[in-house]
Length: 238
Length: 295
Image (cartoon, rainbow over all chains, first blue to last red; front, side, top):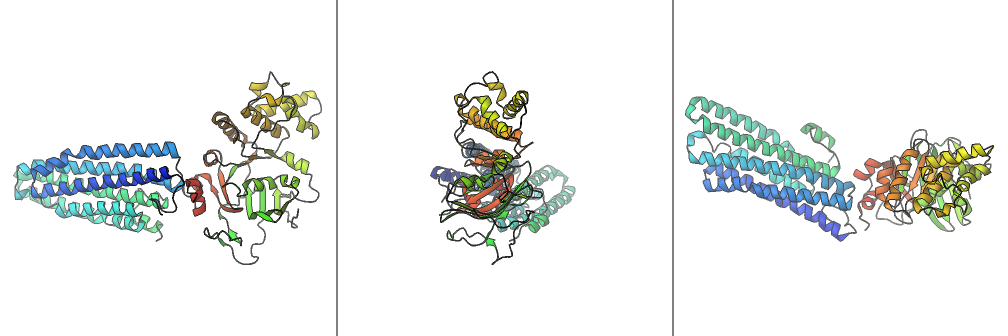
């Protein structure tokens, strides 16, 4: 039976169980954060005040999970002295939950901004513009978590490739909002809020890329952080 | 004991022999054909060299075609499950297997380029140059002083008592034991604690000016504090000596060594920089062992 990191099982059942639990925790945190992102985008688009409030308030749950998982990792390091793929898994997870927590922060930020924007529901503030961007980064996040669940490096690289498009879309959106701000100065405040939401979403995309880099690290042992996509592709032989 | 006519240079024996070498098939336990050791078994200008080593105990083959270099002033750890041949291999390096009647050793071995299994090789001298420390501390039933002086005496390394005193003191200092025993050098070596006894054995090995120190699970019988002191000592010793250590503690191998060699069922599976072996081992068997997936 394959365990989380592939290959045979540990002789120690409890060690096996700890690694499985770690994996489940990360996926649970990922699921929660994904949900936060989706709700944040929806609250922004629809102006749903209640949803926006819920997202802003729920960030504490994400933070709690980060602390819990960090403690699990420290425990494994102390008690098991993991080596090779297990070591890379624990180190990778420590970095992944930091990224997931930041994604949670960005989603909460969008929630808070959406709340402010819902007070002044005015279609001229273009707050439904980031919808496609929001869907894009949520899909990236989902893909990154899938890649982790399946330890699939090819998928991780595919996700990383999609970040360029996200960046492009964010820049386009910013230009659009700038144009409109000049046309409707009274909406500047709200449009700046919308732009802040878009930037938060763009950052979610960056964090999703980081998650994928960690998947590559824990599967292959290559630390590809700070490398360009082309360089990552070049190093990976399918 | 057989030894092929060996060239003076430790260059790898002809591998263009029969068939090609392939990576070891982990699922075929009967695979005793030619295989390839993964990683970096060879180094430039090695202190010791072993090529195509096969060792038999009667009909049973304990070591299969192992080739490995020991680098100068390096600490190389040999790890692997019980019965994998690591201790047997270690003993080939100073011909300790000679004293086992049913043991047959084949292969080319060199120390600084000299064939150590040559017919004219003085094994007593060899074992001074390539010293050994065993798992169970085994001080002689003599005083601490005599334990250390014994070797130099039979090798004629001291011309008078002053010189011998100096050798004894230096050896005990180098083994990080002198300050603890300097006022009781005439007390029996067997009266010391386990950790002290082991350091006494190391001092004894050092006293005859070895070039290589072989250690066969030197800390197995010691508590964590004594173990930590021996490991610290290994770190100091490597400046002046080459050290090969067999250990069944992977964490110890990870702590003390620069290169790690993994043995499995008498074969040398993988050799590499310790950092690399413990973070990204190349062979599945190595990874299974060091992560605890013993199957």
